[in-house]
Amino acid sequence: MKYRLLLIAIAAVFFGTAAVSGSSSRVDLIGEVWDSAAGEAVITDVENDEKEIRVEASGLQPNSVYSIWLIDDTPMLGELGIGSGDLTFETDSEGNGSYTVRLPSRQFKDWDKIEILHHPNNDTEDLAGAELALLGDLWG
Image 1 (cartoon, rainbow, N blue to C red):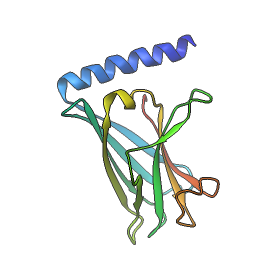
Image 2: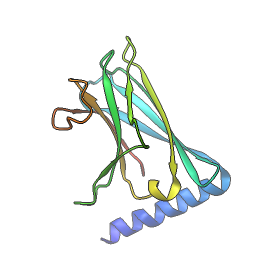
Image 3: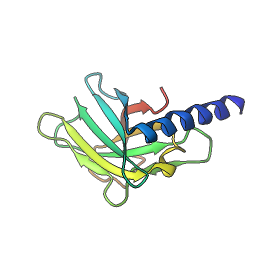
Image 4: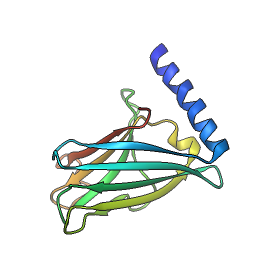
């Protein structure tokens, strides 16, 4: 519990400082299914107390569907698809894909990881059939 509170305090200082300075932070996305998969999420403070998350990925399955999720490591607190509406992207013929969304800063602070899920059957509602393609730790 103390460790979790310490992480929350550090995150509050980090994102509070970022909000004042308008800076960006980068999160490496590491391949989980394919060794060649990699990516980066850039999180930037923007106007109206929002954060913009821009994801760039490569080495994924070509012409495939992916969804992006924020994950809370605390048991039973859950997960959230990033953004509202369509939280998916499709890779091009070379396995590259990108996604950009804005969300309220207050919503972002509760999450620990970013996960990119591959949907081999192109059905983003079938989470049981999805596979973890990329994973990034928001707090280093």
